[in-house]
Length: 242
Length: 242
DNA sequence: CTAAGTAAGTTGGACTGTACAACTAACTGT
DNA sequence: ACAGTTAGTTGTACAGTCCAACTTACTTAG
Image (tube, rainbow over all chains, first blue to last red; front, top):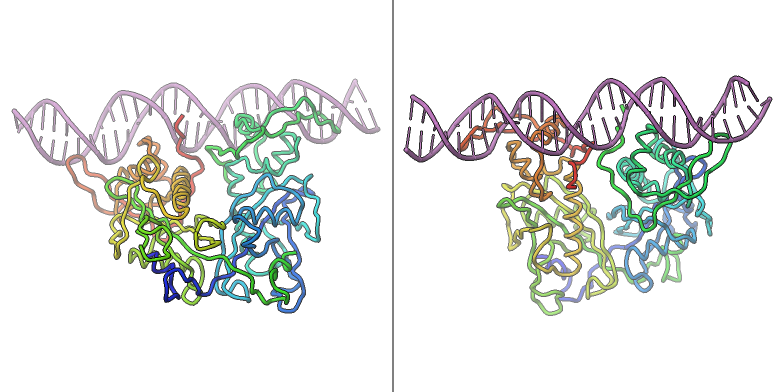
């Protein structure tokens, strides 16, 4: 029974003095910079007893039972500490826990995944953006963070096939070709212009602003996200490659 | 920096003597019984100091840092303890953690979600199957398990729209109308027969066996899952209601 | 033995939305 | 004026669903 498990290691019910795993939260934060998908990473400290000294890692850290009301609040706190922004999109990615992932002992991390617009990415610390090329990161990461990142990339790509998630990677005002470009960067394949426009416009997720983007050629209509919009789910994926 | 967070509460790096949250794993296990979607629940014990005495709850319990190699192994262990079966499908659902979800202190649970065929559901303990009517459970559950279950139901319904997940709810041999019925039970709406058949057959996930199911009327072809098949993702959802 | 009943499985036309490709529109620079 | 470039539209082909009618294979009642 669950009740017996919940008091195991204790002679008296409710005593709860058995060993507890470490509990952390890590955040995979994506943005589009320089026409590339990038992820925010930090460098691990070099102090004595620190695991993976100087390695790159996902921003994150221990849950603070005094400060953090819940896991999402903890993730938001980490996010704020690293970037000074509140992410317009924060979703749980999953959790990773094992006896061996942290040399300090049995540990479990709760991973979140966040999307922020390029123009909100003023870093407030020594964190840096690292480009994801060919669907993966060049650098090796500390702990099992490489695996967590790979999972986040896969989730992002998957969802981009059939949702409006990339909208959260856009600045306040953007054009349809801008948005299509972001879809193409994440999916790493070209999309049909006309089908893309029909789909996005009929999803009722964006609205035109009374302005055009002017450049070297024909001006493009500017749009913005409709307020309070949840991500939209399309009934089809974009037609898959091959 | 993450490194500073990872040693917070300790004067000396690596000491790690700050308070740790409780860590548990819970499993939401679904099966189709009596033409209904059902979930496996257990009753909480009544001992002194036990939270939610006699309430219904999801099967689960504390991670055992000595016994459990990782979270999935812990979930599989709980599953085995409750039903004596190895689930053909076990996927992570998410995690729930907060200061208030367990009266014994700050706690985080890692929730898994499992699908098993009706014919493998011989229970080995006092756990019981409870039907889900109208997309929700009648009974109130302990902790935040109601919320976790709601999330699992939503995830299941979502995925059933565009994947072959219900195949894991089927016995070894089944007919196409059987499979369609399971889809309809989970989605709680009727599906088109011809579109359903085309989709399933062209997904290359099942193969006919050299037998027919005979009944009161025209016999139906029996099929079985192709071995080692990962769930199939369709490029369209079933057309959603209105 | 036939007729009615029922569920399995097929067929065909309407409709929706993408693929592909050619087109028009609006601007810049020379 | 004209080439170059990107924004945005249009039209035909095709794929897959929706809907409905149909055929097939069996059981049971008379």
